[in-house]
Length: 617
Ligand code: G6P
Ligand code: 1S3
Image (tube, rainbow, N blue to C red; front, side, top):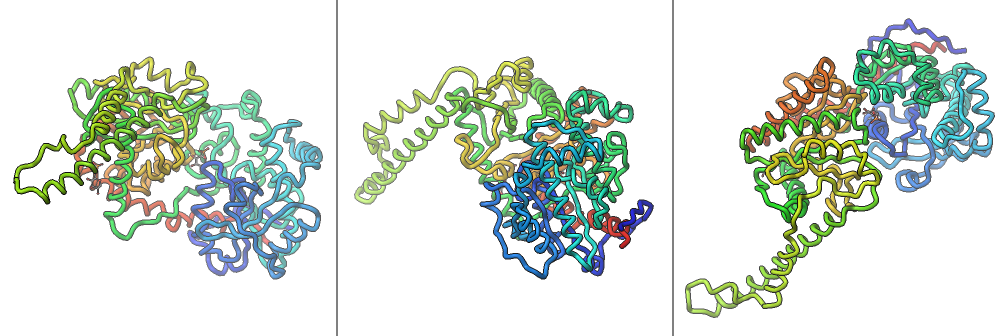
């Protein structure tokens, strides 16, 4: 029977080879082979480091989602030597739809995928057990809850069988987020012989409370979690999260900021902070990523020309591109602070009679009917203009060459004569339809809820509507960027590379991958000390501004003071000249290795060492 000893202190930063050889580690997440959000990035980017370290003793466990699995999963034969495979075989024999194979991402980790539909017919019984044994109330029908409960039951079955099959090694089950963790309380109740680690990537209550309370952090120690869970109608999720946090042998979370939530909202101090890294892949030659910036900035120029130039023009060489991106959480992601700072910056630059242009992109996801037809139209007309000028250029080029080769006259001929009337007319007509009246739209799509959209309402109230004399222009793109997007036609990562600065002054952000992803591409960004990443940078990365990570203080500043700071930092950034920007990009990219998993994995090692020490066989 496992003995739980919470007082064990583990100071080892690295897990030893000998411990690894005697342990099986199974990481469980709803986002294994199933892309939903940030946890997918954690698991996927960490995989190469984990596989290298744990070799055959490492397995991932996730849900079987056919569309995703068909693209990224390769089945493997079940190996009788492996206890994981024997557990899978026994699940299959009992009629469960479970798959074993390789996840086709860097590192190619071994994965077990279980289909939540396999226990659909037992949902009532599973819910009753959670209620009866752990006081977790579950509604009769809630699609996501039903799937996660089913997933929990399947991973409970898997670990129970694995512990029977594995005769010599210890087993660690490492569960990410509540969606994977409804099995923890049941595994503990059944005394299944494994050690459990629960990593929370946010707390349910924290997310809701922060979005609704301007003084969330001041009020944090005083919330009545039970009452608030009922108020927000998230009692089942909160109770699962708490049961997992209390039941796990080891609790970890991604940042000190979320650590405070664990203390006050989950009622347990995390044993270890496990910050998120990336699998940083650098080019061998420094200039390569700078060239990419130039290449993708040129693509963004194309969009900007099509969008703005029919109304008025400006100097693209004196234009700086800012962007923010992420799920639409207006206050939590700091969109409100960003808008306020942009309005202040615009005012300041106008006062200074600056001639710089800033184009700020909001890339997020909102329900919309269609792309705004006039935005599409100007893009199409610009393509037509490009085609027409190209044809004229070709015609002049060829004819000039023949004229020059066959002439004794050294003077340049009249170039107009080389162009057919047809192309002259087409050129004039295209230019006529190119120039339009009116201001360039601040939003690229027709939103379903245009009247109540918070970004649009702010822009309207602040009159930040792309007037010609505005130094700050806005493009609100309420859809994620993809190569199929008719307006940008590029990958999100390429878009990031083409920009100059990411703006992410979050109010609630357990970690926040967006500034780190920008950093890995050599693009500087602004974040806040309320984002786990920003807080980590302030405490661990010296001279971070020089290295392209600006952090605004939102812990001690109210909304206005935060927006003032952001406006100040944005202003400071645009005062840099091109040489300084190039040099800062070099430093940004260079220092991103600080966040390579190789440098951060020791936090996971500590959690796993602790898990082993708390399970005495
Ligand atoms: C990269 C390119 C340079 C280009 C520069 C533009 O460094 O290698 O050729 O001049 O980007 O930088 P900027 O910050 O003005 O977009
Ligand atoms: C969470 O995803 P989110 O965007 O809902 O987990 C991410 C990975 O740990 C983290 O980066 C993010 O801050 C959290 O909020």
